[in-house]
Length: 125
Image (tube, rainbow, N blue to C red; front, side, top):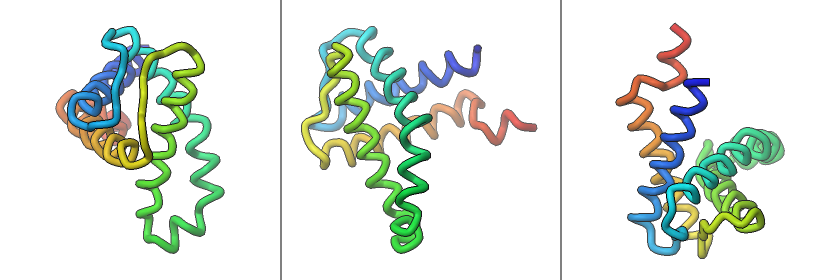
């Protein structure tokens, strides 16, 4: 349970950083919105992303894995649309904003997990 809560908090903070730094990504201003979006984003990455990763395997191989950046942006766009449908006020205006936002969310998540000692490789020891 602790691991889930830490990952949820890290995702919410990473999304907040994306809102602050990426034009075209915004939210309605409450922490509840970021927490809800973090849940939706986690769900999309846990359920939808693996399926799309398998379906796009040839593109992944052809682009030497760079297509995963496009896939990450698509997951952020999908999560924002699902959140909007659930009444969560998180908005991504364009694919370009989603692309930069997904890169930033990934970097912030990586750094925070490293600082907090919550990276998966570290936990398996």
